[in-house]
Image (cartoon, rainbow, N blue to C red):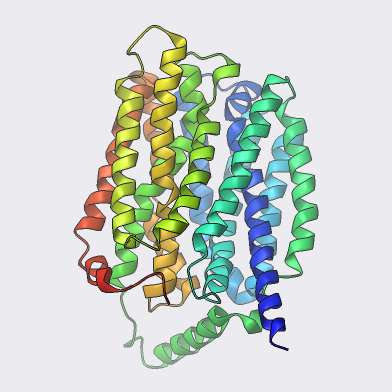
Length: 418
């Protein structure tokens, strides 16, 4: 029947969306409680906290070869299942294990590994479902993630003000996530339905032929993937800063009480709104234009928060000023990653799973920047100075995108009708 393909397509879309929601809730639970984790594990020095948090990007780096091998050994469906279950399990460990700095370091490492494994494997699924539709729906998946993260941030903010500790918070979210994963997994595309799986099978056969020929057919990565990987690197630096240090910024710089530490909540709310707007912008703007505007918004937001943070001695005014700055940052960063993924799905000649792995390999430095730079600069000069430096990353996005000849050549192509 004609309706069956449409129904099957919707089930796949909802399954991927459900896993995006679960990932967003787990992430928000984690990020909203970082000041409490810092206090609970007794990390007083911001520089020391930065060093510990640097284990998250170390884990992300380790995840790149791990998830690529998992694609080949277990298939795309099982790769998603293993990755997101590990993500929820690492949150559970943070809630039930005793407060010890070595244990905290191990949890940071584990969280980073499954974070990146989930990002790559789940977005591979999202890209393939996106290809089943005439118009791009990629931003809706990321909007779903942002919506869940927004609700998770609101939940975290409420639990903090109700004096409910992070162990209870983490355990509850982890258990609910594991139940949801079990339901959504059943409806993911089968590997033999996966266009990427067919491409990877061909790529594996090609690599075998290359070995027989002494590797003469080996090619360098596409220029497009290198450029997108550099933008991703910068975007990850911005994301990790606002995700992991936003509430600490309100706590350490603004000296706001817990009831006014709304940095992470504002970030997640504006990211959600921005991703909804991005879906509409794809109809009217070229994706290169969207990336350029995003870079300027990021730059403006950080400048407002860092330069105007001490404009007055009034706590309310300072909170409003920084809420504005954080809002611009959230709107700017909201559209970068979905746009990069969508460009890969439409323009890259490399199989999607391999393309994302290449981009991750280029961008892996990005997550190392915030814990080391923000932690160290904050300890010696203040977090407002660290935010001033991170704000320049927005101009880097503008520069890379503006001077990319590959992206300029795509300006005459409609991204909306495919």
